[in-house]
Structure formats: structure tokens, C-alpha cells
Image (cartoon, rainbow, N blue to C red):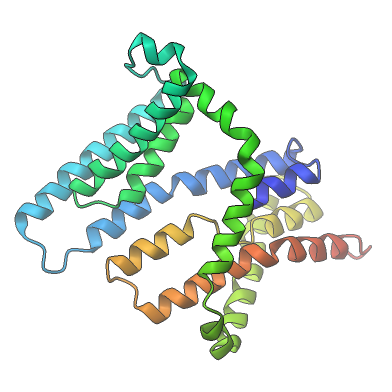
Length: 258
């Protein structure tokens, strides 16, 4: 959401760099599905054989659902005619679908966030719920504002102040390494050096879905609380400083030596 808004404001969303960056972001968002599955499968301490089998069945169903959604250009949901004609009922159906899939994945001892994410993809691709996206679009700015507020609330200020050196070093390492790696990838795809550097800077921030991964990880007791606070601080700060970081990179790109 942060990067897309930045591309729209700079009128770069439909440029070659913007389209490529957006495609990479989409793949990153889809990658959360196997990542959440892996976290769910790693959380097997004190788990019985029956629970492992239940997770296996849930994993198979999730993979089948993902394959089915990817193979379809547009999905047709078996909704009654009354729902198809009523936009308010469509919104209600989308909410029921999201809560239902989240509950279903929870019953299989998988992450409920995974079910909600799959429901979002399903609603976006279903022609019966196309009105939902259109109706919620005016609230986009409100949702983005709430997102930034939630990021600020997630940061533990006393923890950051107590570990300011570690957080600063990790933040700098994340931004620089992501920029270098993504710039090299874009340059290998045929982009010029300046465009590759700019694209790398755009992709330097840590994705928003990392909050979900970190939360699921600490809930599964795979990540200790101190490491969780460190991850949250680095993820949140990378999102907050990314517009400043991108503007600095753009200024450096104006140098004749580049």
C-alpha cells in the first residue's frame, strides 16, 4: 500500500519500472501463502500424530485452492440470485467468506491470517463480488492512514531506544542490501543503471505482510519476544523511512557520475 501510493503520486505506476516493481510486489504478496504454511508446519512441538495429519489435510486443501484460483482468470462463486443482484448482500457475503476461510484454516491448525488472505484473493477475482472493491475504493486513504497509525502503535519506543544501535544497523543493512540485490536483478532484466537503482530503492523496504509473518511466528513460539520486537521495529521503520530513502536515491541519481 505504501509503495503503490508513492508510485501513483509520482505518476510512475504505468511506467516500465513501475509495472515491473508492482509485479515483483505482487509475487512477494503471494509468497506469504507458502511462508505461512511453512510456519504452521514448523510449529509441531508437543503435537500429536492426529494433529499433524489434520495439518496435512489442511495444507493439501490450501494448495488445491491456490492452484484453482491461479488457473482461473475470473472466478464464479455459487451465490444465490438475490446476492448477485444486491450490492449490500455482496459485501456481507465477502465478509462471511473472509471469516469463514479464516475459521476453516484455524480448524486445520493453520494460520487464520492465511485463510483471510486467501479469501481476499478470492473476493478480488470473483465477478459476483466485484462491487466490493469498487465500493471500498473511496476508503483507501482512510485505510492507509489507519495502517500507518497501527505501525506506529506496534513500535515499542522504550525497546527501540534501548537497542537503537542494533535497530539502526539492521535497518541500514536491510535498505542497502535490498537496494543492491534488486538493482542487480533489474539490471539483469535489461534496465539501465539509473532505472535499476531507482527500482532497487523502491523495493528496499520490508513488505507489509512481514508483520503477519512475525506475529504468527511469535504466536507459534518460533520467534522469541525480544527478536519479535526487533523485527517489528525494523519492518515498521523501513516502511516509515522508505519515502525519504527513495527521495535521497533519486537525488543521487541526478549526479552525472551515475
